[in-house]
Length: 146
Image (cartoon, rainbow, N blue to C red):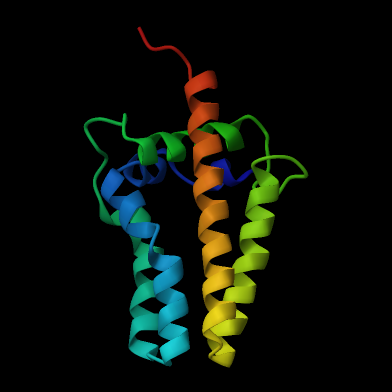
């Protein structure tokens, strides 16, 4: 079963809201900071926000924002029978993102600021490049509307 089969059209529509995307991006670094500081309230609230974020905002009137097109690109990518983790771009970036973020989590657990920052920085960079690729994919493959 594909991921797009599980996620509803309403989920994707709400997820395209720029407020959803732009407030979700810093959650990875915020989670690392919370773990590094042993601020369990920050960790808990960050995880809660990540879970409710995709349904927190309404569907936007306009989906021309860069972050909105990245979500539309991800939806289209998955509907075109691609996987989240593939042996090509953008899947490899997701794999690198996951490994780098785990490295950052390890650094935060050990309270090593260099490892935390390096892992978090690489993960965020991979995420932004991943999103840029999905925007380009959407711009090149989206159905033309009349």
